Amino acid sequence: MTQAPLYDTHCHLESPRFSSDREEVVARARAGGVRAMLTCGTDQATSQKAVALASDHGGILAAVGIHPHEAQASGLASQSAEERSEAIKALHGLACAPYVVAIGEIGLDYHYDFSPRPVQREVLRQQLRLAAEMNLPVVLHTREAESDMQSVLDQAPATLRGVLHCFLSDRAMAMWALERGLYLGIGGAVTFKNAEHLRDIVAEMPLDRILIETDAPYMAPHPHRGKRNEPSYVGLVAERIAQIRRCETSEIAKRTFENAVRLFGLPRHGS
Image (cartoon, rainbow, N blue to C red; front, side, top):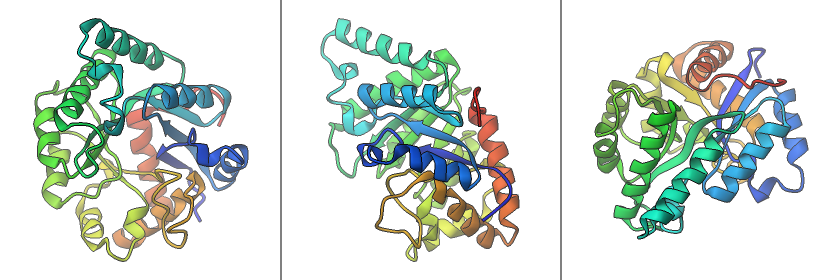
């Protein structure tokens, strides 16, 4: 696909869907030119697995956090101040582990509402505070919650940095994100036939604010749509963006790799 190194800035290698062939998946990514992968936890257990994977594999970094789907079940939503304190301490401990470079995947999801919206917002605020205290970027999930996401982030420290992962919102949200200093995470959806609005946004956004990702095992790009996604497919995202921007795929790989290194850094062991 491209000779330039690739950086998959969002995947879930800890997912059970990779249990039978995780090593092969990682090997395929490396063979396909993926130099770095950021695997993102969604609760305490998956965050621990993400940390373990990053510790055991060169080329993998980890993000730890509580996804909005898990907000209600997390200790961060407890009525007990002591339990909330213990939960944030546990997350802080994970975030201090080697190879952890971000707090995520965190955010708001009003499509499924698996956790009450006020709980989602409070759990997000707690994790944003933790990220600011630890000087870590955030990986943000936003689905049908753009207005509240803007409100919560506008109240967060101005120095907070991060990415709107799997960006599928409108141009107004993209412009707000850029003004807030956030990156846009572009994944397999940019290859979908019904994603013309996303391609229009990608066409005009500054390249120094775009990251590429797979969200593996979800959201596989064309021609793998509907199948299990994996980090080796991130090159297909780079190719589609290059077509949209009318440039070489190697240029997109290079620029998005530089952006990812600026935000998350590189693995500190192996490659």
